[in-house]
Image 1 (spheres, rainbow, N blue to C red):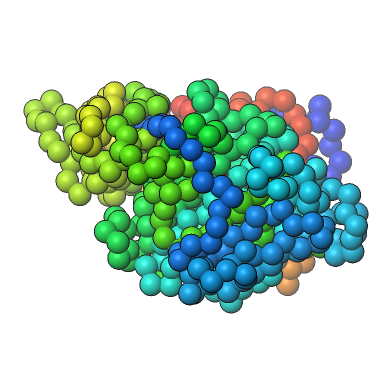
Image 2 (cartoon, rainbow, N blue to C red):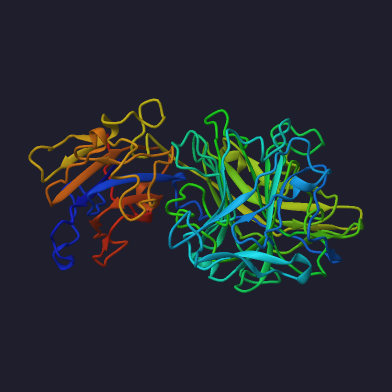
Length: 578
């Protein structure tokens, strides 16, 4: 099967001069200048088999708040953010004799605008109202160009247990802008280094809470959708508790290893526990090993990736307080809420969507969010011929790696404790056929990110308007300007360890020469096995720099200067090879 992309330089043509074009060999095409394609994890799935969904469940109870926090023996850092000097926020462990012995106090400095590093600032300040008078005050931002900066750390040992790798990050947040369009870092370890040394992003991003471990790759990027209904429905001018826990790669307290749990809960004195958004299985610890070695730049309510552009345009719009780092995975009743030690029965807050589609050989994951104390989780699979308890699944998230057709069927989650037993609704799982030889741009023959200034082994340039660069080589770009960090912030498509930019001529030495305006068509080929190309779905992300788009998905002709667009092709044009 062949897939073609048609690229159009947008130096001078007007939008109404750019028309959709079809390659003579029936390729799907887009008008772009430089291109970067990153297929989604379930890259190519047989649509005839069933569309995708996800399983989710959650929990609730009632009793009281245990804030403001006080440092305990597992507390690594605690920033109340009720400081009054207007410039810095102290780490409460600095004056405590009860903090983790591994912790070193880290104060954070307010950096904002109009002149970063030179206060006063007009867009970020201490002294904003907190949830209650007992909390004093909070830190607030009114635009995205600010952060509380804690400096660059040599490693991640100040943010997790040095033995087990476990951690809990949590904060109270009050959004002054809708979460649906947000990009607000809560507690970030990202920096301006290459992908191998970048830390993590923990942020509210376009209606989700995202955890993205960057050090070395983006293979641990998890997003949990924020609720829009129910008691925890995301809203502006309302205080919420947000948290993420990781049980560690080598837990010593009986926890299941490598479990990431995200929480989002309305701050309410009647609550007894934090509500789970979703759970995931991590494949790497906070350090990034073995693919990277993070040197995090600490940023609160903004990214430490940039201080000259403070917050890297990821500053929180709204208020934040009670930011705490703990060196173990806290339970739902050990955070801002308490049930005074009383058990509570399981409650399913969100029933699972009915359909889930996973690729053959890929990962089948069904996320469940459940409110319960001391639970036992049992996943059950129903097929035409059998009913089976799924082995080695002891959390509210079902994860099966290297899925086969035998993993298709109907699944339910049974949650039980000493008080009750509840069962979720059915999640129907279908395993779809995947493509062989379908790669992101800029991936070498070893399945790793390619060296730069060499031809992409999987994509060729079959049409070019530049007589000096007629193809067939599609050149892999370097990790430098002007593409990954293009003018205007340019963070729309940084090198992410999973794909690279390609172009007609590359950017040797970080210098890119403008191509002649016109059509540029790139082609890749891949093999379909046990799938009909006439009824399949192809998904991925297409990053584009200064281009006009003309396609069935985007019939309007618009100029996107540095855009990221989600691609989903249905009924892709194809060629059958004998």
